[in-house]
Length: 79
Image 1 (cartoon, rainbow, N blue to C red):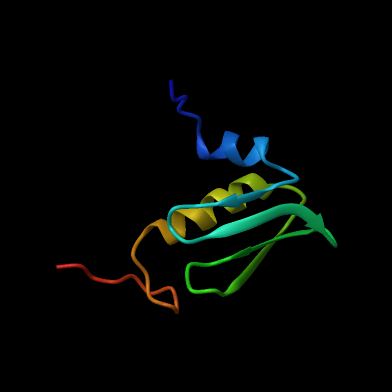
Image 2 (cartoon, rainbow, N blue to C red):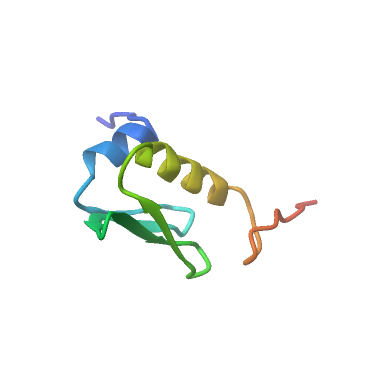
């Protein structure tokens, strides 16, 4: 049986580990100098503060890359 959990819950449950997403992103949720670090689908490094609204920041980042984008982040217009 598969349990459907929200992305927010998934991030919270994996603090201290690494998450890999189907959209090509991954993030290491092991705090390093007050930051969490990840990689975009194009291999660019991304970081966010490990304090405050970290879960919201990560969810927004993953949601951003769920849409088809170029390396610069521009939306790709699909026909």
